[in-house]
Image (cartoon, rainbow, N blue to C red; front, side):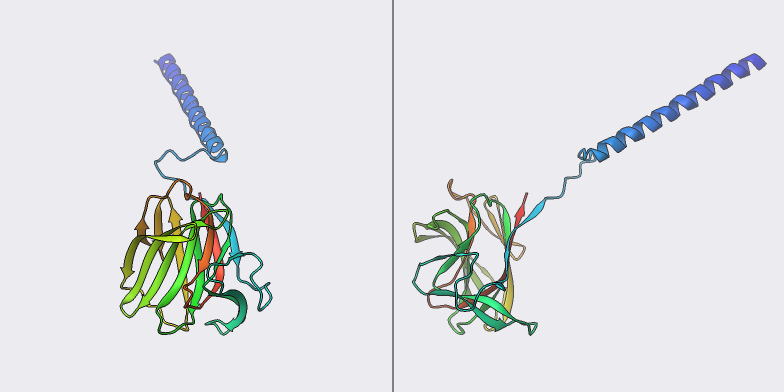
Length: 239
């Protein structure tokens, strides 16, 4: 009986030691996977990676000149020049004033990205809002552009495709919850990804990009009868 108990005790100790070694080994393997950046196995998706592609607050530009980081497209032969003006915070700084021209910047490799900016409308009573271009081709002749018109009942957005300078309307929608006042600064954010355009975090348009317009630079513009101040431009890539 005593001998049987001894054998049982030996077997029990051996079992405990084997179990402990297994647990320690599993822990080491898990630590190795974690340190090696192995994707989680619990079904959770990895967070998208973001990258700052471009930013400009025009602070380094000279007043009266064209902004250094942009290419000026002579669409309506008006102007795009640096001016000094006061912000809502009371801070005085440089902005770019665009009348009838398009400014472009960026790379053909930009595919999925978010554009954020501040703007102020200087043409009260005309209902002319900002225009933002995306997927701009290398020669600045082909791109998509979202145009806005300010109405008392909201903001009317129109999505165009531009081919060799000629606009073709794709879709139009009205945001009745959006109110934009002239002579005040407003923020705008556009998210472009896989044929979908979000405006201020709300889905606005879904479209089928043509083959040669699935990536590209960005642009700032306005109607020839309008004057828009733009500032604090940022482009963030999404991977």
